[in-house]
Amino acid sequence: MRPVPALPAATDPVAPTATTSPAGFRYDPSRDHFGRPPGCDASDPDADGVRDELDPAVIDHMEFYLLNYFKAGRGAQSRTGASRTSRRSTSVRNIFTDFKRHDLGPAFHEREYEGTMHRQFLTAALWGVGTSAPYGHDGRSINLEEVIVRHGGEAQASRNAFARLDEAGRREVLDFLSTLVLFPPDDTASNLNPGDRTLGIPDPSGHGTINPGVLFQMPEEGPE
Figure 1 (cartoon, helix red, strand yellow):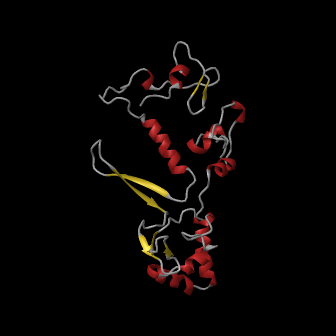
Figure 2 (figure 1 turned 45 degrees about the horizontal axis):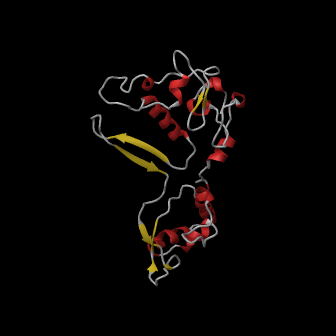
Figure 3 (figure 1 turned 90 degrees about the vertical axis):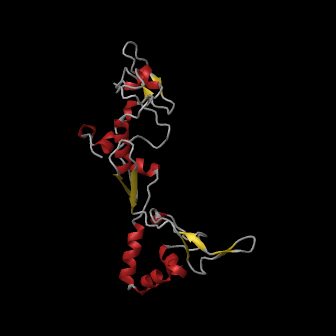
């Protein structure tokens, strides 16, 4: 893997110079220490005949970030086969969709401009449903209870099962759905310990900084 263009200059063993990456990150060797990536000096540092490979540390950090970032769905990967080139299968939990199209009954049917009737709709994922009102492909259901009882067709049995619940049972279902929230980056960053803002590191995203201890469990960086 070729390093970020700014790193060869910032980590030059003879004359390191401050530089800025294309993403706006400032590499200043007079203030911080940056490890020199192997790719700065060789395109095949492990001499295995494969050039510009991804550093395993990059994959490890990215995997840790993705597994610990705020999300309503959780992912897990399992290796199939034993060869170096074996593929990985991915399973996703808590997304709550079958990725299929269903006829949800006449309350959802919609006439197209040329006169045909649109009767089948893709099951929408429920992650984030707690903060994504109004509901339905047309937005005609103002809350979760209304969109549930609006269902018919292939969803009639599920709709009836919900309607038969007593008030406490329906509230439990609705309370659970309300917990399926997706956090946008600006809200997430504002809720985390920003770390040391005196370092002067530019933030092109405008979302603020995040204490590294949150992602990499570094006690010396302070609490989350």
